[in-house]
Length: 177
Image (cartoon, rainbow, N blue to C red; front, top):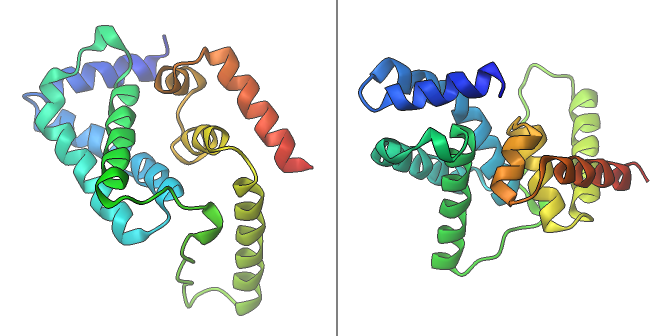
């Protein structure tokens, strides 16, 4: 087991009574959870709301986390997945296509040519990703936008870490075509 996973488990156990440990977990996981939700939802306001809900649930349920059942990241991202599922059930919406995601608001610091190239690259990437299955997009989001290990992803999607590696390999290969 990697030192990071052990450290995260220890922080999670301490976070029940230690605000500093909780803050470290929050700072480490917030961008990963936010990016994961955004790549799956595609709307900034909804992503903000859902991410807040995930961390509210984390606060209220941190005492129920048991390191014997898996890594903290798996526990937290399962909360994130369930929060998104609940949102879509309640609002009777489907997960959006990555192509339909809102565009980033460009900063005034970048030259217009760079912004146009980045926008075109983003469109191409989103079009390519939308050609993948939902499972493949989910695993790619967990790997590259949330920076989870193959083992952590495997725990979330109930696959072996070797199979997650194969899925990632094949999905990336499809994107290169």
